[in-house]
Length: 164
Image (cartoon, rainbow, N blue to C red):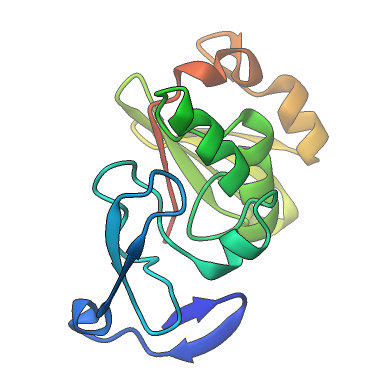
């Protein structure tokens, strides 16, 4: 299903591209992109910068919300600096708080943060090893990869993905 601003708009069509009929400019880089009748294209990122067009992001540019992993304000800033659209560590935490599951690539390995059984689980998907944390604050202050705090090495993260 396609959800826009927390409202069910329609079931996702098998050929979703048939709904992308309106040409507009990407909110981040200005490249031409196709959007649906509502001004959204959350299924196919901009070929130039990777932003997924969503009217809600435009209306609330300072907030992190699906389908993107960072705020529109931060995306524009990073793009203007010629940087990849990777969220800050705090934006990553906001993604997790909103959706309960989010993953990232670091050093060609997949890691994930999820919420099974009311615990915060930090999982190394490639090995199956995980560590549970009692709170998001405990995770932020103690999560490590190779004995380095995640918050201190976050700038090395390659990309993010939604679990599911």
